[in-house]
Image (cartoon, rainbow, N blue to C red; front, side, top):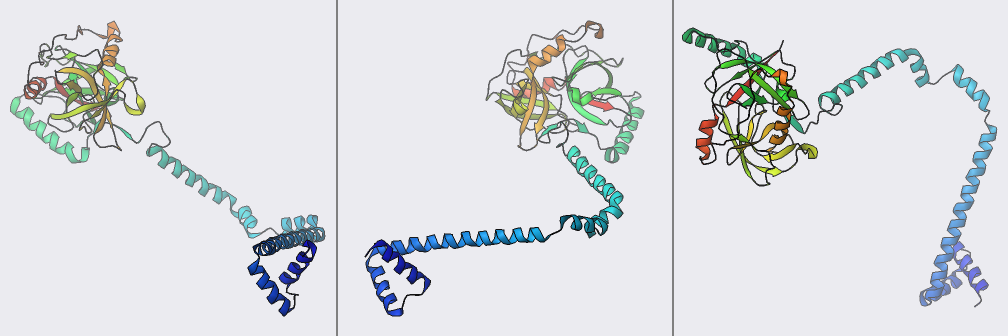
Length: 367
């Protein structure tokens, strides 16, 4: 059978024009010969494509005819003279709609700002400055301090509650204290309170926001020299996995936090900080980071909010750089760091007993 004869039969078969007897014979041939069956399938697909193409041409032709029938200029004039309900509503209420849209946009921007998404603050990082709950604690603390003053006959600092609190520790025995820059930022006055509950007025000698370090000096006549601090300040880097600990005041009592050094860089890879696995809370900012031998290797700054137990500390060599940058005319007493560590041979509990006299609550007051 020639190809043109086969195509004619396939066309007749697919169109339904083939007589019933011939159709039965052709079905039997199709089942017997796979080549013929394949050609029937191909021809069916081809004719389908031709049909779709013809339909597309017909649709395009019809659209062209409709377009020719439309008078665009007349339609434009009608719409302008009789605007749709959307256009009419905009014309009548566009000022109200604009105000509502502005309020909505402002609300969204405000939410983004306070969640940290529109500011420089990263919501995953929390500085550990503690804001004091005035409503809950002010009356109780005022009453307690008044009783203490009556009993002892001496004042121990302001009777009002501090707005913010953090931790600080002694650089020297003659009254120089280090804490975080963010703890005392915006302060009208700063006091430090020792382990015995005595408060002393301080002045801010130097701040370094880049390293988040602030140096305070106790200038209260009631303050007595602490004597030589028992720790030294490490200049070199500490190693990953090294056991560390901190002391601080997330509450009214000194709290101990044991941990380990987990990375040589801090939040977002900050090379001035260490990453730590250590329990810290608001109020721990400015506390000392100690190694097992009793060396200060950093200053606690903050923690990561999305990972439990992850905290950060400014490395001690950047604290030393900040101290070296203090203008000479800002110091009215010598600031000479101790190079002798008397904690090395002591147990952890013995170290803490010595340290508690050199770690302070930092209280920030402003109007």
